[in-house]
Image (tube, rainbow over all chains, first blue to last red; front, side, top):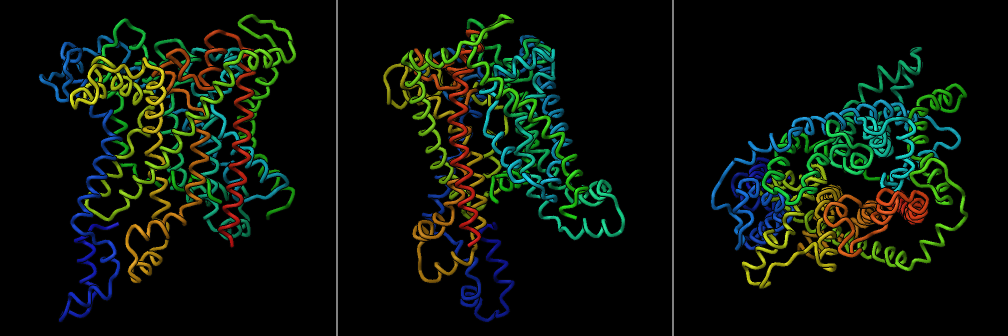
Amino acid sequence: MTDIPRSQEVASVDSPALVKPQRKVRARSSRAMIDRYKWYEIAALYTGIAVFLFFVLAPFIEGFLVSLKPLAQLFSRPYTFIPKMWSFDAYFTIWTSVPALALHIFNSFFISTVVTLIVIAIVVPAAYAFARFRFAGSGLLLGIFLAVNMFSGAVLLIPLFRLMRSLGLLNTYWAMIVPGAAFLIPSSIWLLRTYMLRIPRELDEAAWVDGASRLYTLRRVILPLAMPGIVVVAIMTFIGAYAQQFIFALTFNSRTEFMPLPIGLFAFFGKQEVIWNELMAASFVGILPVMIVIVFLQRYLVAGLTAGAIKQ
Amino acid sequence: MTSSRNAVLFALALLAPAVLYILAIVAYPLFDTIILSFTNASLRQEYDFVGWANYQRIFGAGNFTEVILRTFIWTFFSVSMKMVIGMLGAVLLNAAIPGQTVFRILTMPPWIVPMAIGIYMWAWMYNGQFGMISGLMQNFGLIDKPWPFLAQGSSAFWATIVTDVWIGVPMVTIYFLAAMQSIPRDLHEAAWADGAGRFYRFRRITLPLMVPAIITMSLLSLIATFNSFDIIWILTQGGPSGQTTTMIIDTYRTAIGSRKYGEGAARAVVISLFVIAFCIVYFRAVRRLSQGEAK
C-alpha cells in the first residue's frame, strides 16, 4: 500500500538499534525489502502502467482533443493527434445545436436518482430478511434473485414493451425507471446482505430482550449500523443506473424532454454527417460531474465491487 | 427468535416488495416471452397460437446457427481478453510504487461513465477516413490507405470486441486487484525469504490462490458479455452484412425492428436457455469454491 521511501522510513523508526541501521532494518523488516524494486523493474512497471492506462484513457483523450478541433480540421488528412488550432467553439455551439442538452444531463441524473431511491427502499428490508431469518425456501429464493441478475433487459424487451404499453408508461420517465430498477435489485440485495451478516446478531437479541419490536430493532439498531453498507449499495446502484441507461430509453421513450444524455446524443448519428466535435464536447460536459465525483467516491466503488462479487 | 411463526411472517413482509417487483418486471415478462414465442404476435392487438412454427422458422432459416456460433466466438474472445488484460492491470496496479492511488482512479472511467458515451468515442476512433486508429496506423506506415474498421466485416467483428473489452477491463482489474490484496502477505514473505523471485511467486502463490476469483469473474463476465447489446448496436447495428450480429442484436432486430414479436420471442427463449445453462454452471462453481474454502 505504501510507496518505497515511506515504508523504509517507517521501518527505520521501528528499529530500535540505531548503531547499524542498515543491517537491522533489513533483518527486521522484510516488509520494506520485498517491495523494493530494481531500477529496471521500476521502469518496466511504469511502462506497463502507461500502456495500460493509454488503452483505458485513449478514447477520452482523443475525444477531448476532437472537441477542441474545428470541423474543417477534423475532416482533413493526414491525421494529427494534437489539434493545430485550439478552439472551444464546440462547447458554446452545443447549447444551440442540442437545445435540450441541459435537460438530457438532468434527466440522466434524475432517472438514476429515482432508480436508486426505489432500489434502496426495496432492498434494505429484503437484505435484512435474508441476513437474519431462516425459513423454508429462503436459500432457494435468494438463488432465484441471483439468477434474475443474469438476465438482461435486452432479452425481455418484447414483453417489457408490452407491459409498459398496457400500464400506459411508454414515453414517460417511469418507462426507464421501472425496468431499470428491477435489474439492479438482485445484486444490491446480495451486496447489502453480505454487509448485514457482519453485524453481530447479539445486538438484535439484546434489543429483543429489552422488549423492542422487530420493526423498531430494524429501524433503530440495524439501520444505523448498516449505514455504511447502504451508502456503498446506493453508490453502486446509482453508477449501474447511470452507466447502463440505453436500451430501455431507446425503446420505451421517444419524447425528447425525457431522454437521458446517451439517447439525447444518439440523435447525432441520425444526421447526414455526424458533427463529431460537438458530440464530443456535449459528452464531456455531460460526464464531467460524474468524473469529478468518482475521485471522491473511489473507495466506496472498490468496496462495493469487492463485496458484491459473489463469494459465500 | 429464528424460527417462530411470527418471525417468518415478519421476514416475508420484509421480502414482499422485492418479490412482487421482480415477479412483475422480470418473472412475468419471462413467462410472457415463452407464451409469445408460440404465437404470431405483431403490432396488431390480436394474435393466434401457431405451435412450434416460430422455432421451425428460425432454425430452418439456416443463418440462426451461424448467429449462435458467432455469439459464442465473440463472447469467448471478449471474455478471455478481459481476463488477461484485467490480470495484467491488477499486477501493475498492485506494485508498491508512487502514484498507485492515482493510477487506480484513472482505471475507472470506462466503467463509470455512461457506456453509450464511451462507445461514441470509439465510433469516432474507428472512423476510416479521419479516425485516430486508421490515422495513426497510416502515420506509422502500418497501412497505406484509410481503413474503415466498421465497414469491413472481419475488422468490425474485432472492433466491437475491443470496445467491449475496454468497457469490461476496469471492473475485472479492480476485482482482481482486491483478490490479490487479500492474499496473506506472510506467504509472499516466506517465499521471498527462501529466495523465490517475483515471477516465481506470482506463478506459485498469487495465481493458484486467485483461481476462485478468476472463475467467478469469468463466469459473471461471460453472462454479461453474452447479453451485450449497446456496443454492437451503436457501432454497427449488427452490420456490415450481419457480420457482427449476435443473438441479442438478432432478437432486437426481429422484435423491435421488424415488429415480429412472436418470432423475436422465440429467439429470446433460445437466449434464455443458454443463460439458464450458464447460471447452473455458475452456481455449481460458486458452491464448489465455497466448499473448497471451508476445508
